[in-house]
Image 1: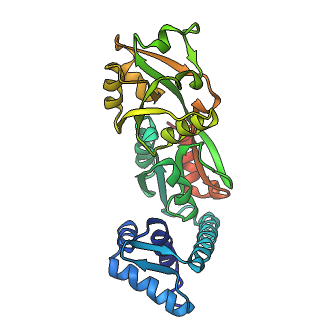
Image 2 (image 1 turned 180 degrees about the vertical axis):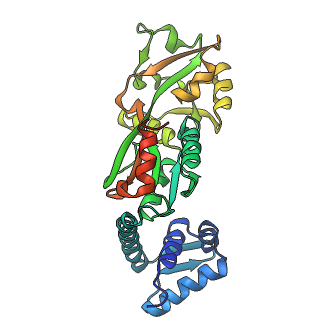
Image 3 (image 1 turned 90 degrees about the vertical axis):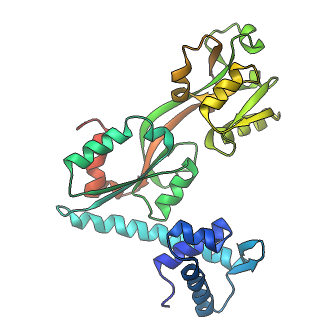
Length: 301
């Protein structure tokens, strides 16, 4: 089957996931006409419609959903094959493809990468910024050799290496009732904040999803009248008394000296988020990744 190749599988999964051939083409860096032709050729050779095309977009048919599952499995297997074959390339110039969330790239990671590139000029290193929920997909589809992300996503089947802890805090105006009523000056449980207005931060992001899930566990919906996308916007809103903010420790650091704010560490278990390095099992034996793991261990840098 000439049309059944790695690129076509990736294009098909992108169409199924994004609901648009144009968006899938942009995602896979090919022309929309080429993406459409690949899907059409695939359907013709298989003799079945995989993608339903409507004026509002596209979506996989039942057969397409089944095919997508097989594509994911095949691409995952292909990634494992690549990993095993890389073991035979010791001593040759290679590549290292890293994916990392913004929190990781805002810390020491760029300096580790820069030192690695300096020490290993024959290894081609690429870095892509992602959201945590993209990390596992990048690994399964063999887009990245390693993803640095939060451990709140399902990383079953991958090797994990701790990278950094990022504690979650609640922040608000110094005169907010939450802080005036607290007997413990250091911590607070999330349920104690649910009676007050919150400022929504980065709706749909990992932290926002954690907060929403925590609210559901307590069978309470958070009160939002203000929704922001940036840390500085959140800080200004809570400083003005518009509500409480839930924020990661690193984002909070530049504002700890603000006399108009008070902050408490969330004592809930879910509020201790960990950044991890994830990579396919067996991939650690590849020369480039094995060398980079030494930098993460602090053995070199």
